[in-house]
Length: 395
Image (cartoon, rainbow, N blue to C red):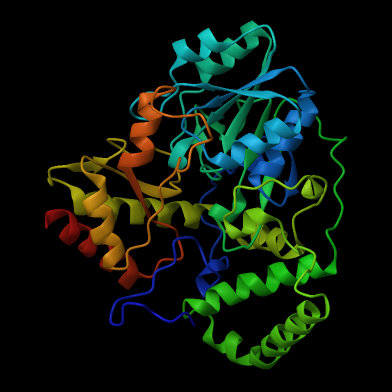
């Protein structure tokens, strides 16, 4: 288990981790995921799915892809891999697409537009779909934050020519992404296994992450000897190779923004695919919405902070709880000092993208502090998060 730097306070995971609650308890109500939007292929990350979407569209050198100025830096390397130029369009203060600016940036070499459903809140996608159809360009729905949910009576991801997703933001797995298309067959996307080493690493790392946070104690005890043997064997391999060993998993699994084309045609692991089958989307959505509401209630009536959106739409499944803070740095320090896990989406931005490109994207990257609301949080953990958040912002 991880050493807690703040004894007496819970050690809370920022992302889902494997625990007994990860497994399906009941089928529950029917809830759609992005995989219900159309044909799909399960890959190792969302950025690999972006690269595959661009390849399917036929994007090539000398062409342009429109990308939101409020973005993850991992979205850009797949565009460059195709030899294309990323062109950044503006967003509104609530992260919705600035449709006028998007339209103004469409040029004769524009081949595709990427639209991100930030934090699990679907964009108003119908007018963007209509614009793309009118101008003859492809629409890629970025569902990396939005694996579960519906919008406009359709599953998320059903509006684009292609949709990409990141299942490891919603499930307790070490890797996982998806390429989805409601409009096109994916027969040319042929995937192969990344090998036994990859399969073993994904399964063991997913288990070990749960062990680090005190989950699955009986499984940890049963596997203690094999895990120690694995560590010793890996150390020996590194020693014999002078520390240079081949990567068994993509950089995306370790929160890097890098893009390695060697993972383009590799399918997701057996472990990750099994977790997809075992997962109960209805339960995941219900728990995330409930945890979101607990955090939302904690900031109600406190000046200087507010949820990025005034309400959580029906059918939405939040990735995190995005809190818009007037003076973010002091609160960020207070929360981190208390042991609250946080993420700040849109930081760092791609080189050359700043407030002159889009003032709202720079504002959002600085002023939005996102807290976990995932389904693996225990009751004691979400209660502590809510009370600690209230205490920190009221200080």
